[in-house]
Amino acid sequence: MVRVLFVCLGNICRSPMAEGVFRHLVAQRELSAHITTDSAGTSRYHIGEPPHHGTLQILHQNGIQLQHAARQFTRADAERFDLLVAMDSDNISDMQHVFPHGQAPEIHYLLDFIPDGPRGRGVPDPWYTGDFDAVYQLVAAACHGLLEHIVHEHL
Ligand code: 4NP
Image (cartoon, rainbow, N blue to C red; front, side, top):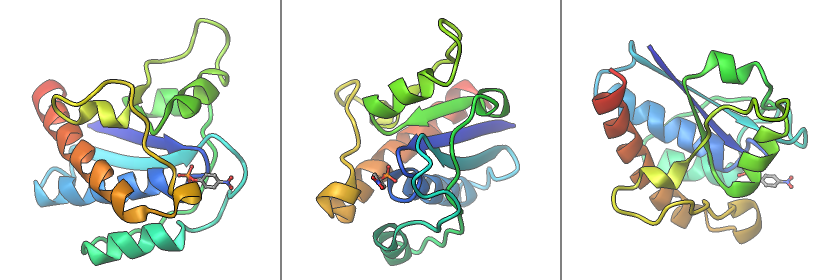
């Protein structure tokens, strides 16, 4: 079993979008028994809330249903998940601060899974840009690449 956790700031826009897209791709490949997916936020801002309307709308337009209640990333998530996948560099430094010095786990940038793309690139935050469509294109491309990575390296 490979367990994947997507992390952003609020856990209402980007990481639940990635969770929905990725779980959908996993189901299409009939790998749901082998790969599980969740998402979390580094902040406490929206704990318990459903995903943002813009995230639910773009997922729905692409035939994807998602039920998720926002929650905060914790140190225990490093034990409970095999792959920690962050949306931007702020998420990574906020996640690292949850751990004692020098004990932070490996954390990946989501967009690093786009083949041949630039490294260390962040997913723009639609909470500020309002552009859920552009974010969806990036998230979908990276989720395809992430699934290929897992199939080749982890299964
Ligand atoms: P997310 O977007 O990290 O992609 O869920 C945000 C959601 C809420 C806030 C910031 C970013 N906020 O400041 O409340």
